[in-house]
Image (cartoon, rainbow, N blue to C red; front, side, top):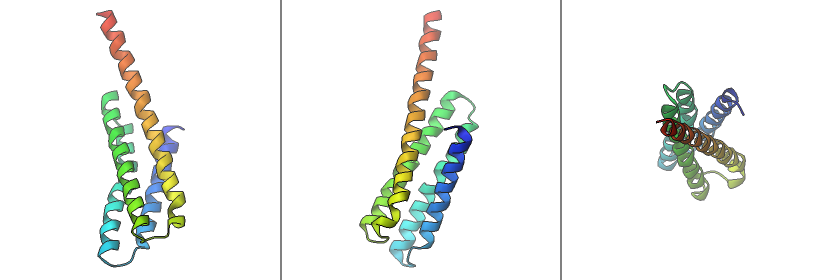
Length: 128
């Protein structure tokens, strides 16, 4: 998957989160969980775009870690929404699955970037 595809996928994910929160009841639970998941569910796309503009590979890696954290937090809120009975579980199965898939993609990218940075570090040390 290339960067443009992932950018688009994260944006679609954010739009799905927005639509989900529009279905929440207008009570304290709906408002609170809605506010939380809107923040965490829309930020991975924005942070990934920022990562793609990173000043260095280390900057890219740090921003990818932010995407990872936000996706993990979003999964927490999705689980809480289901477990609180706010939304029927079967209605969120696909969104939860997409969250998990995006998380795996980002973790894989982080692992790849760490290996790349470590090999550059080893290479530069051996030249010294």
